[in-house]
Image 1: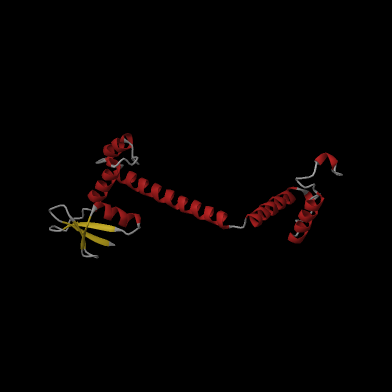
Image 2: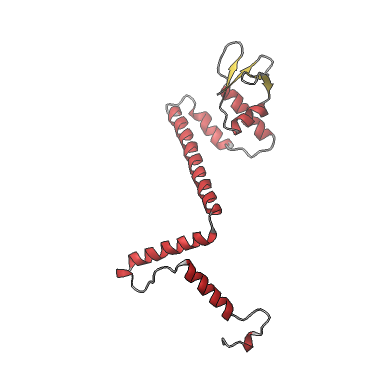
Amino acid sequence: MRILKKYPNRRLYDTEQSEYVTLDDVRKMILGKDPVKVLDSKTGKDLTRSVLLQIIAEQEAEGHEPLLTNRVLEQVVRFYGDSMQNVLSRYLEQSIMTFLEQQELYQRRMREVLNANPLKLMQRLADQNINFLRSLLPGGIGIAPAATEAELHKDVSEAHTTMPSAEEDPSKSNHA
């Protein structure tokens, strides 16, 4: 965790790097999944939340679409001091964490699909469909086992040699 100190002149000091940083630098740390903690240089009071809120306000001031609408912010304000405040806080945190987990799962699956060999993927899907159909039919009636790769290559080669070429007149073909 990066410890930042906030000085009375409103400057932030990164104790790990021994240098002053801007709010944009702090935002980049967070984007890089580097947790930060901001402490008042004199009192040691935790100022992390106010700095994070300031980063959000700056992002919106720069024209980024707000994540929280005015209506949602009004509702949040109403929850302060309410007996349900703690419940809402936990609910929002858990909802965001679940969303992030689902997003990561989706991205991982998309990477797997995009990195997969398309022919093998299609073959696997076809095999799954055939197995599903076999499970529905008693004894798998009428469904032949999946062709081997060699048989598929042979079938494609034969189809290619018997098809008329693009230059030939299809009306003169023997395949009519």
